[in-house]
Every structure is written in structure tokens, then in C-alpha cells.
Length: 326
Image 1: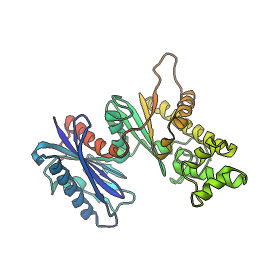
Image 2 (image 1 turned 90 degrees about the vertical axis):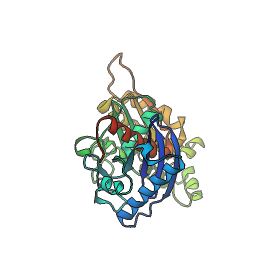
Image 3 (image 1 turned 90 degrees about the horizontal axis):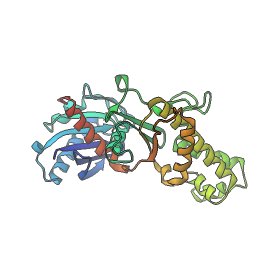
Image 4 (image 1 turned 60 degrees about the horizontal axis):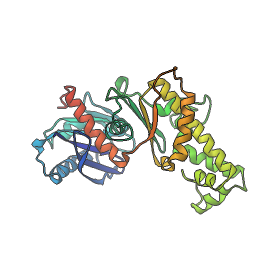
């Protein structure tokens, strides 16, 4: 059995684990990132976390094949540099070189959404699928693409921004500066925006009570709770959200035709209330030729382990593809 270190670098936590070649976590640990620090101090802690989980697993460094890192922003696995990362002080950081000062192992780096998609295809909701797309519905809409069991990130590692597919020309403002993006309608932030708008426009709606009970703000659950209580305005918010999510997923199917799309994020805790209508509508919006296999749409299952597992599996793939990582 071969073993890899997977590191999930986030703005809040550094998570690391030992993962075997089947995507099973042997052990894992975490520490605070303390992102305001110097970038090299954060890298030292990443290396320390790797050393810590190697010891916790009862392994020597010589028994580890490689280190994989999933990072936000724009990593370049060809050079080993982290070009830029939101919410972290990294700018043109030679991540591979710096980690290897502490651990003499091959080091590989990719975007966190990409490695999460790989994790879902290896051991999660898209298990066994060679071609999959994973979409996370959070503050924005993140996405990762796996083609032939490998991460696909486009030219210059800057593609596959599925959250910025335009689904309504001239629509809501997006954080990217454009209008009408998938993210502007299908993110949890968009759901909150539409919920609060509906409450303002419908003073008698249950939504106003739910928002008041939640400290004066809606969250991703508010409209679904109102819908279950029979509120018309809440039901309309949920219906519009599902329609926009399905619109974006239909475009993803048309662009990539994956075997499986997995969707994750807090709003997916609504389970079948979200998944069943989204499946039905997305497939109607996609172009599907007669008598062809239909893509599956599933909920993500890896949760907080996706970054660790995906980073480790990415490192394994790189070694298999003859990439040195040194």
C-alpha cells in the first residue's frame, strides 16, 4: 500500500492527513492558519503538520510517496508556485521549494476546488466516475472538473470557473464585476439575498418572523423552513433558486457532459427537497441526444475531508504521470 500526505490550506485552518492509494484517511489533524502572518511562517506550519500526521500514522518520511496541497487561489503545479490566494498573504510563493526545505518529498499543488472534485470522484458522491464535476454552493459557487480521472484546469491553470457561466444576461451583479453569473443566482449568498428581498416585499410572510428569530438576517435554511410551513413567498424563493441552480447545471452538462455532477455546501443539507427537483429540471435544460446515458446529479459526501483526500490523490496522479514534484 502506498501512502501520501494531503494538505488542505484554508484561510481559517491548515488540515493535513495521511491517505492511502484508495483514498482512505489513515489519520488527520488541523491547526489554525492565522492568515495575517508572514507567508513563510504559514508554510513552516504546513510542513510541521505534515511531519505530525506522518508520526501519528506510525510512518517514517521514507514510507511516504509525496505531498499534495490543495490551496485557494491560483497555484501552478508546473512551477510549484502559488501565484495568488484570496484571504491569504501568498503572492508568487515558491510553495514546492519552501515545503521541500523541511521534507525531502515530491510536492504537488492544485486549486482547492479542483482537488475536492477529485476526492468526490475517487471516494465520494461520484465514486468511480472518470469524468465528474463538483460544485460547491457557498458564499460563491466553486467548481472543479475531473476528466479521465485527472484534474482539468484549463489553459494556464485558470479555467473551469463554472460559477461565472452567465445564466441571465444583464442580471444580478456578480462579485467578478459582470452580471448574471451562475454564482449571482445559485450561491448561498444569492439565496439569502432573495429570501430577504421576498420578506421585504411581503410583510405578512412567515419569512419576516423567521428572519427576526435568526437575529435579523436570513440564512440558507430560512426559505426552506418557510416553504415547509406553507408560506407562499418562501416557496417562490425556493422555486426560483432551484430553477437558477438547474439552469447552471444544465449548462455544465452541455459543456462537459460528465458522468456525475456532485453538489455540496450548506444548502445541500436540505437533501431531497433540493436534489430531486434540481435533477429533474437540470436534465430538461441540458441538451441530451436520444438514447445516450444521462449524467447523474448527486450530493457531495466527502465533507471536510475532501481537501485532504483530493490533495493526496492529486499527488498520486502526478507521480503516476511522471511528474517529479522536485
